[in-house]
Amino acid sequence: RELVLDQLHAHKTHELIPKSGKVVAFDVDLSLRHALDALAEHGLSYAPLWDSARQDFMTVLAGEDFATLLARFGREAAGAGAPPGSLSQRALDDVTIRELLRACRPSPSALSFASLVPDESLFVAVQRMIERRLHH
Image (cartoon, rainbow, N blue to C red; front, side, top):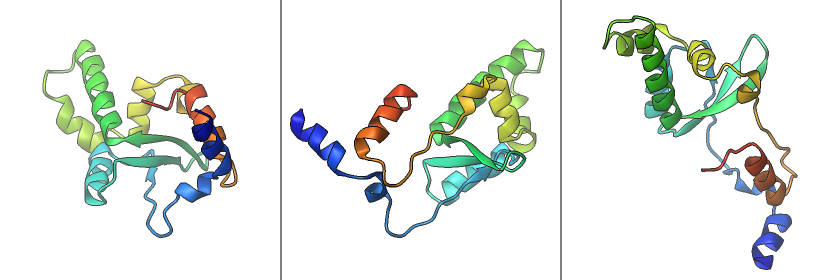
C-alpha cells in the first residue's frame, strides 16, 4: 500500500499524456449521428464535450455513455407518446448532444467538467476521481 501511495505522490498527471497524438472534442450542438461516426472514425472511446456558447468544456462522454443516454432518452420519449422505434433515426439525425444531456442529466452539477493542471500528482487526480465518482 505504501509503495502505491509513494508512486502516486511521486508522479505527475502530465506523465500520462502521450507525447504525440490528437485530441478530438465534440461541440454539444453536434448531432448524435456525427458524434458517434466521429468516435468510430477516430477509434476513440472517449471525447470531451465543448460548449461554444459558454466557451468551456462541459464533460467527457464515452461511447457507452452515448448508448446509455440514448436508451434512457428513448424510454422517456416512448413515455411521452412517441411511436416505438421512431427515436433511433430521429435521435441520430436530429437530436444534438446538448438535447440528449438536458433530457438525461438535467442537473448542472452533473455536467461540470473535472480538470487538473499538468503538475498535479497522480494522487490528487485519483482523489478527484473518487470525489466526483468518475471511477468504475
